[in-house]
Amino acid sequence: MDYQAYFEQHRVEHLNELKEWISIPSVSALSEHKEDMNRAANWLVDALRRAGLENVEIHQTAGHPIVYADYMHAPGKPTVLVYGHYDVQPVDPLHLWETPPFEPTIRDNKLYARGATDDKGQLFLHIKALEAILKQEGTLPVNVKVCIEGEEEITSANLYPFLEKNKDKLATDAVLISDTELLGPGKPAICTGLRGLCSLDVSVHTANTDLHSGTYGGGVPNALHALVSLLASFHDDQGRIAVDGFYDGVPELTAEMREELAKKGFDEEQLKQRLGLDALYGEEGYSFVERVGVRPTLEMNGMYGGFQGEGTKTVIPCEAHAKITCRLVGQQDPQDILDKIERHIRSHTPAGAKVTIVQREKGNPFTIDPQTPLLQTAADAYEQVYGVRPVFTKDGGSIPIVEAFARELSAPVVLMGFGLPTENLHAPNEHFHLENFDKGLLTIVEFLKRI
Image 1 (spheres, rainbow, N blue to C red):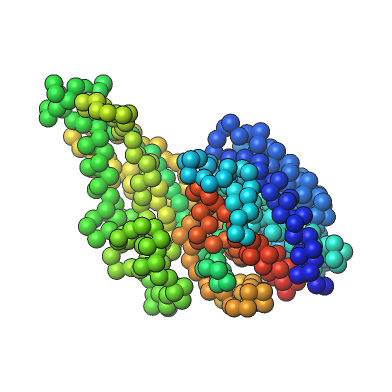
Image 2 (cartoon, rainbow, N blue to C red; image 1 turned 60 degrees about the vertical axis):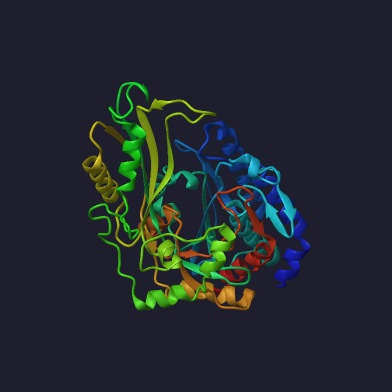
């Protein structure tokens, strides 16, 4: 079958469908978009049915719906579970968007909108690849199940119990996900590792009210001073995390792994220029690629307290707050890391300050051997379409459910991404290069037929 001709013939139709779906503001983190989440899930149900999949169902959860479908008509052939998510990140700061985030626009062969690359655009490739095979050949070369959630951007809290309850329903020989990146234009990559995640909120309180900085300044504790001192204690001068026991379970970086990561050919000077930086930052003794791919982190994501309005207000704040996340690798356990950070905070809290800690998200790290046969078959599919064999990489991001899929279903997870690192996912002006929309469709078809 000439799939390239088929996709070229239907390209405008497919892009219009994708635009329609992306225009639904399915922001899972904001309660005001609850109905939009339902609309996005129902749109997906209709799209899966139109594609020819069967047993299409919406499963209600305590949060946002999970969509399931399957097509099980290939006896003796492998079963593939396709996973993705229809929820997207919030759009602020809105003023930095060149076009409205939920009014999809094509410029320079790129589709601009929230969710264009993370993950509606990449997930849509699977729907249309399956539809194309069914329309062209009347059946699929493998058995397929589809499980699509609406809470990946808020750590998949309700997918974990769904997975545990429905292991038989979701049983598979492989999990297939497109929610990662190529190295660059024309440079495919297969991700063999994702960092885990944990997060917490920290609040520091001092006096029972804000105080006049003239009357009390220099004589009472300042919540902002206390918070800054506390946060500064997390790292030493070499960029290492100073929390006792934080690096327990972190694997040593072998020469072979360093060699594989170096194949990315990453240009740190170019990165500095693109980001307007005069220096990069991180743990001494590691390259940028190593720091963001295979080393753990502890980052401050937000700090606030005291007067933040226009002009000056001479007060000593009585409270200050911070949001912290960690990316984890190897055998690091999210709960263990949160407990160690909490002990560190309590032992480093300055005199006169009281601390409140709220532990939040937890997700385990994931890794897979690049020699796994299905990953090599995925590499063959990329090579067939892109004309170059992909590099096996470690991704600094987190998809918390991936490790659970691998563990609970005892199946390899194949991370076949088609995004690019420059596509502003989670940021204003998110976009998806349509060259990879076109090639992604062909690569997925090639992979399914090869296995």
